[in-house]
Every structure is written in C-alpha cells, then in structure tokens.
Length: 240
Image (cartoon, rainbow, N blue to C red; front, side, top):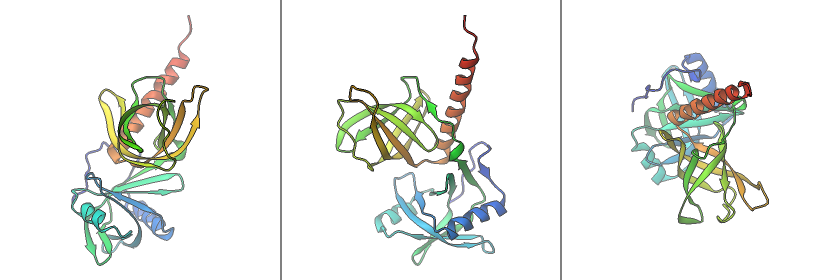
C-alpha cells in the first residue's frame, strides 16, 4: 500500500523524521492504545511493540479478532489513530504485513497531529448541519439529528423528546455528518453523555469521534475556522 499524499499542506502535518520517531517511541513507551481502521469498516486496536529506525520498520501487537484482521489486511489503505493526552495523532500504514502475531509496516514519513485542547467549538445556529444515523435500539429507525456543538473531538446533537433515548456508551459504526450542502463525510461515534436541555424533554447527546480520517478532519477544521471567522465578523458589525 502506498501512503496517500493528496491532502493540501497545513499546520497539522508532521514530516520531520526525528519528530515522527519521537512520537512513535512515546506511543510505544506509554503502551498507548492505537486504533487501526479501513474504509471497508474493519477496525482493530493494538499497541506499538517495535520502532526500528535502522530498518525503517514499525510493528504492532493486535487484539485477537481474526475476521477483523483479515478484513483489515485486505483493504487498500489502513489508518492508525492514537491519543497522547489531548493530542490526536494519525497516520497511514505503509506496506503492512503480518509476521507471526504482529503487524509490521514502514515507519510513516507523514503524520497528522491535532491539538484537541486548542480546538474551537462551534455552536451551530443553522438548521442545515446535522448527523444522519440509525437508532442503536431500533436499526430500522433513520434519524437526522441537529448539530448543537462541534469540535475536532466530537459533536453534540439534539435528540427530540419523542425519540427513545440512546444507551450511554453505545457506538455507531457509520454515520453521515452533513455540515453544508457540499460538505459531508462519514465517521464513527461513541456516546459519552446525555443531558436534558429544556422542560420539553429534549436531550443533548455528547458524542466522541472514534474513527475520523484525515480528509474528514480537514473538512471539520475548515468548517470550524470559517464559522469562527463569520462569528467574529458578525460581532464586529455595527448596529444601526
């Protein structure tokens, strides 16, 4: 597999080999959980057990899930996501192969780093931004939930009072986030919290992104930046 490099350069790229090695070694030393996922829906978690700069090799210990592993290895691309405190790290696996019980690949020459602590959160006042999903307890029930709050780390959604509550901790493997008519992407979510927001029984659901590829992350960042600029412009506009 070849590493994609179609995303425009930005402030989130890490390309210095010394910095990439330092981040990978920190992940290894802290035994950080790393999520591996592919566009075909396959996903596994594991940890780094080897960083070998001389051979340019990286190796993972994986959780045992044979079906998921086979699906992962058959995919055209595999992405890795990990968190160091409030920093999200993301990179693609180059030429992954299975050696005994480990997955080995080349050390990436490109990594994305997002400082979640500095994320600007957007409170949406528009009816357009929404997330389309199926209810976890009723898979036949399709929902379009309005976005109340948005960041690179997650999204808050409005659950109408008439809809059956979601179980905390539930995970949705494939939802569609629609930010504008021509800005949308698919991702996975985990429900972190739920709280009533009015006396009508409406609930705010707080979700964490569990699978967000580099392209979707840049869509989000651009949307957040544009919304922040617009918000500042409106506040500065003189009243008549």
